[in-house]
Image (cartoon, rainbow, N blue to C red):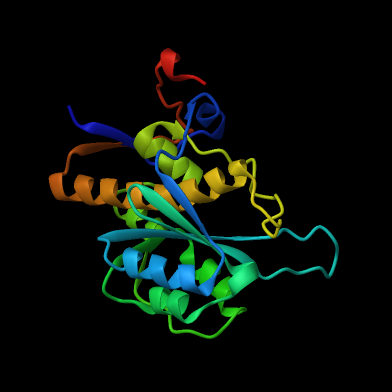
Length: 218
């Protein structure tokens, strides 16, 4: 039986899905020396997922620069604390690389934020928003795309937390890691579906309710 995917999913249905937990190792990078070692490892991988976080501004005229760069493999995530180390030569090398498949979602916005820290020439990034549209998925948010493909709920509770804290909370690290790691999972699944044609697109006018297993509700 082919995998069913929807052109769009209903937000309220996602709330009933099992919450996604990052299953891998999280490494927080707070020095240029650590960044160098981590980038060497990351550039040996097949696919990398990228995302960024910025401290939210709640006052008029207030603006903060990009605080965190998350880079994930299939089983680990590296959190580069840019508010401490900035765009080190190693991080620029990673962002400029064209040899490893790099994926993000709405990545142009992240590039703009990173360019506030320093100038660099971005490598060839794949935007998942373009990929999902190629198979008929209309939703553009990470939460909805992930729910559509994997029937899991990505929590956004920490999105507006302080990303410039002296020490990130465990919940912040989990949130940040999931966003980058989910890009890798989505990319791999989209490639599989396109290569095997092992899916059926359900086109709905109204937003559908995704079926879920009662035992999976957290």
